[in-house]
Image (tube, rainbow, N blue to C red; front, side, top):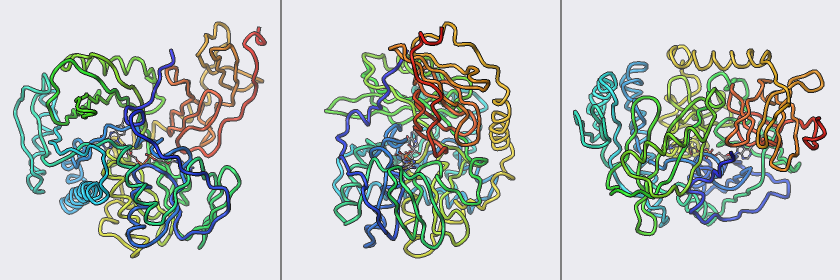
Length: 508
Ligand SMILES: Cc1cc2nc3c(=O)[nH]c(=O)nc-3n(C[C@H](O)[C@H](O)[C@H](O)COP(=O)(O)OP(=O)(O)OC[C@H]3O[C@@H](n4cnc5c(N)ncnc54)[C@H](O)[C@@H]3O)c2cc1C
């Protein structure tokens, strides 16, 4: 079954149409990516009198920013106790301070630019579902107190049902992410910067002046290149594919039967459950997000994930009506700290990625940090977020298993057995043998078939068909393609090669 997947934020925002770039240009700073990271960076540079150019492959907030939960908080799950164990208190404090600055930046910009994005203060809670998680929360609480984060701990509370203790950070916030980015984008343009949409970068040639080629052949020459694309389109010597792993999650907006007067909550463990409320036209609605998993690994049945979120919401809120359903992707790093900064020493190419589903503050921070580095040469948080930290070595647990499993998928996929096309149902996709090689076949609802080379353009991993979203997804590094082979997101640079197009009846 095909599920309509437009997020609540994209459904309810008025989106500005920005022009496509149609001529070659030369700029001081080119920012690629029109999500919260790219637009914040443009804003910070424009504030300093610079006139950067932003290019975006689709429309603003078409990426993860438009498909988020919308919590603007320094409560990032269990994080401070983990950073403290790996790197000590100095880095832990840097993380807390930098994320708090990002939260305050959002508050200040909303006030300064009069952005109507329903920014609302609340407490962000993390809750335990068993005794082991309760101990993790207590450890996190102790570090929070040492860091001076205004926080509170409860052994047990009435809400959420069945919790084994919860920790809350006060003075946090939620907002409507698309209205927020639309608001800053307007301010960016008013300050003289330029935004172009439907303009996709496909090639980067490095040098003192970088040359970026777009899909339509247009070139942009730039002194500084900011990659606000989540997965970098160009990573020089860094091999980021071995350090970033994609995580998918699902979201739902719900008109509920019960009273929804509560703050934001997220659980410690798996399956993930994150909730908040949002007020639209005087009515309070529920946002439920969760069921996170590594992209294209095993469970890409969107319907099942959404059913579980529905049951969870129904259990405490009572579902009247589902207003929107969606899914989205973000990237994790081995030590849960994003990469923000130069791709190599002295380079004027920047990255901002690995936000671990906390990019509304981390992306805001990245926009600020990179603008600072461009304008002044450095930033006080550079060291903590640098790609040079020894994260792979120090984070053996998650990192090595996730990275190794990416490599395993790459190797395993070369030997995956294929299936025949017999009994291929409408709306179904499979890996088959075609012309002696593995290929992907999709049968649409008009009985047309498309056969694609489904070796991912990034590193050759054989793609899995995602039945709910009708996409071909890469289990190794999160590249995603439409059923027609068009690149949707992730590290690959090109769409898939179409091997055959015709009618299903041609195959019999
Ligand atoms: C389900 C879910 C819930 C989340 N909830 C929260 C939350 O409550 N709080 C929080 O802090 N974080 C949350 N996050 C994370 C947060 O939403 C993201 O980290 C953040 O939005 C990333 O912003 P970005 O601007 O870096 O990337 P994106 O918003 O993905 O923007 C990148 C843009 O780059 C464009 N692009 C890519 N390649 C090219 C190219 N070659 N040329 C031109 N343009 C290109 C894309 O089209 C895209 O629009 C959540 C994430 C998920 C998946």
